[in-house]
Amino acid sequence: MNQIESEFVLNRFCIPSTPQGVGKTTMIARVLENLRTSYPNLKIQGFHSQEDERVGFEVVTLDGCTAPLASINNSSVESIRWPTVGRYKVDVASFESLALPELQVKEDTDLFVINEVGKMELFSSLFFPAVLRVLESKKINLRWLFLPLVNQR
Image 1 (tube, helix red, strand yellow):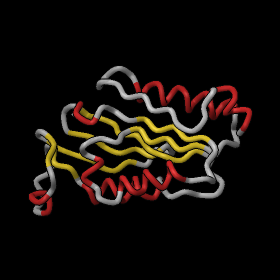
Image 2: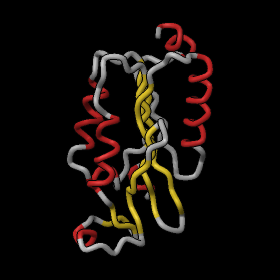
Image 3: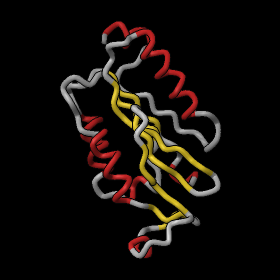
């Protein structure tokens, strides 16, 4: 890990905070692709959010598993109680079922990628404490945390 840290001149965190649509997720995908090619044994955990402008957002783990985060089309009985952001109903339980396991600090993890700490994600009362545990972890040598400006959604 020291080689990676010195190559990227990172101490603990990389926190770009920019408006929507400027390419943070694209940048993450390219960086991860390069890291996986250059360091095939690197253990990476985390997730990002993905938007489908027509229907909503989903959370996607780095190994490709997906779960709904928010939708304009959910008319289930339980969705009546879900919090809303604009026209989207936030499915907190679905988000937590996929995102929280990705935030469990494991001994062999080298890098965390958290690409989204915004209004929708913060409806989960368990999410922010899990993010703090990742940030406070002494076991992880290199962490990247990608934060949008919270008021951008």
